[in-house]
Image 1 (cartoon, rainbow, N blue to C red):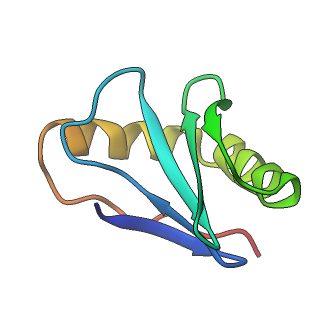
Image 2: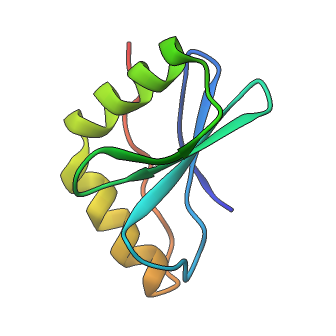
Length: 86
């Protein structure tokens, strides 16, 4: 599961050949979330509210890059790193 970004202790990852809808995984302090890329909607989450808000804000900023990585992962190709929140 490649990590494509890290910020404020949050790790953003993709699984290769994952199921639809297009989504990514976020993890913070052992808590995890799955976020729909197209709608920036939470599919499942145990993240604290503050970190979840950061993840969703980051996702809005990088939606096109996330979709590009989704396609790369579906094609089993190397993923690109995405700029973290600062």
